[in-house]
Image (cartoon, rainbow, N blue to C red):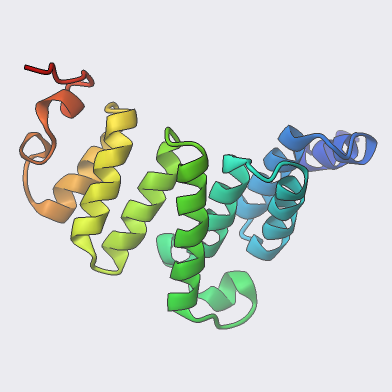
Length: 171
């Protein structure tokens, strides 16, 4: 019988409890299986080993943001009703921490941008998407999100240097 990826990762972690990459991979699998509470425990175990691990904070933020970003009632993935504002606050706290630890982590900016859009804070959403595109201007989904929020062509929203993926020259 062939072991699943999850079982393989669990075996690696049992034999090497300090293996952060395996813990992060397992936490992501668990999160994508819509088990945020179990994933949070795994992300916390990474933070215990490496308190400055941006990916662990990103994962925690995505766990709290999951029901909002995926438009799923909290009861379905958390087995209980949760306060939406508390979920947003927790998600933002961990996503901000991730971005602070790794300023090039576009996933953190994008998740914050999408959360801001959901709670109708368009200006903040645009700021987050701009920051993300400054890191990686090739993200077409983010370009589309910006266009949808503002109703304007992206070249009118972003400065030329960001859009072209080049630094603007100082004069």
